[in-house]
Image (tube, rainbow, N blue to C red):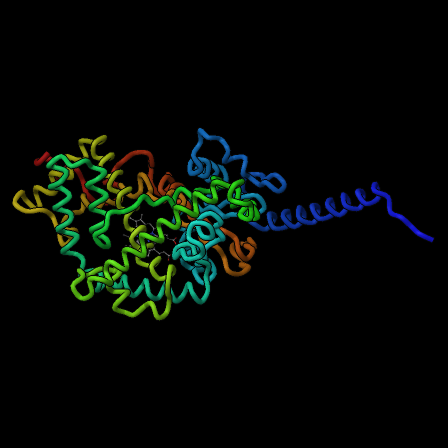
Length: 409
Ligand code: HEM
């Protein structure tokens, strides 16, 4: 006797399976949520993503107000993925520093790591054998003794920057040239778009990684990110080839150090040229951004400019430019630099970390692969550590008192 299964029965079975799967996923998420630090109430499957959709509120401001409500560490659900967001330095140190063996990896970043860098990104790499190999090379190229050797060039570039600004060179152009030359090699930078790709909630592919399999004609964002990544890789390659072609005649640089170490034996191709390239970008955008904030802060706070100038006139005089070695004698300038970095953090979210194992901490259970953001914006704007955090006030970082330099103001 032949038996046939009717269409409604198949549909009912499918619906029941789907419902069962969704219920299991939901229960599993609720279980995870129960053991993590509290945060805004997540919706099933989309988590807290709706909080990031308001175009009038920047993501770092959303995180800051969540930090006010939920305390120094809270959980933000990026779809079904929990992310821990830290808002104070003590919690950052006790998790990311004290437990660095667990929290030094990077999360899966679809746009940045997989599409833009095609797996070659140094700062977006997950913990493992290659991570260790490349970190070893990088640490070697950044040894303090070697970095000291760049001091003279940095001093010279500082003087050149001031001379250019005084001669009327457009500030952005002058800052870009300074940042590119002082930190790495002499190459005008291409625009680096990777920070744009890293903003939480900007791309749905981070929440639903399967979207990277969409064909290019349906996913122009994918093509654009890949093209930017390829341009970046080409620039990195030219940077290395340029230094290689100059041989011993090339000026000292991180790239020259890496070539001299024969580092390509350990890491080759795009992954190798990404190391000096990554250091170049790490120093370029960050320095440019900090200099821009410095300019903004001094133009909008003329009394602080007067104090800074008065310290330089008193300690250095007017016959020479300050150099790096003068730093200990310039407490107000040192405090000013710190306040610039605090007032408008260059990387508002920091760079995301990820855990490599299940971890119990302060009564919470943090699953393997949990993303951890030490939010620089939340930390810098934490009134417990920095009273009146919106205020630009260098003296919060020093024993410096205005009266010491009033005479010269
Ligand atoms: C204003 C200047 C700078 C700022 C604000 C800045 C910010 C940061 C941040 C937030 C991180 C991530 C730390 C973490 O993993 O939690 C980082 C890492 C790093 N930065 Fe910087 N940086 C600056 C300048 C530079 C310069 C000039 C260089 C090198 C030429 C550099 C090279 C690096 C390296 C090698 C790492 C480690 C990356 C890794 O291990 O994945 N940075 N920086």
